[in-house]
Length: 238
Image (tube, rainbow, N blue to C red; front, side, top):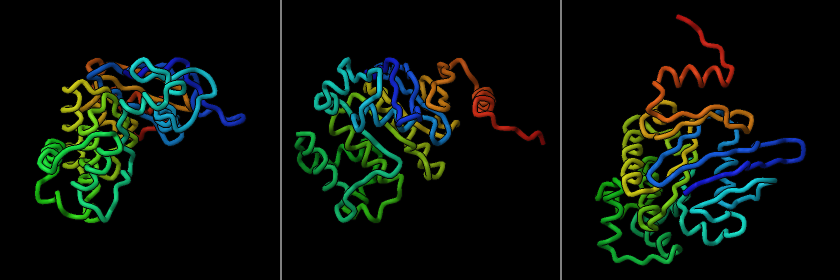
């Protein structure tokens, strides 16, 4: 569902993404780890069609993102670090609005059912989103993906700032989407959550994919060790 072939993005002499090759199939969760500036967000922006690559290609469901921008967007749902919803509207109204943009129209009962599936408590359905925690807003984002019947989910630091319980709940929602066959690419700093939810983990640095593993082939301890070594951080022995 997600495929890149030597995907590169440069700004003058600066190469933000350098010949990236990765693949995320149906029902897989690929977590990209890396420091700020590693190329994670650039990768997501290229897949979203927010910018054009300098060279190489990105594909969503076998369609080139540049040549078939409108069609590929139909398969996508995107949840950034800070999800932009209409603060004065409640969850039902926000979901109804964003579903309409995707040409999906639901009655109130169905909208409530989708929000319930996304893990939002019923008592919050009709409260203004301005009163929501970040975790609650992210659940509305998942509901939008469910309503759109998205086949590909792109996430940019979705658990940043979430407390452990909210982060755990978000990970559980990703597993539900995985069971529906959704292909997920998540950029994150959270090694623990990546190990918990991913099927594949990659480490990026300086725009390059440095290492990649199936999650079953690496322990959390080894993941942390490899991450620190790749980032060239010095560890302190206590």
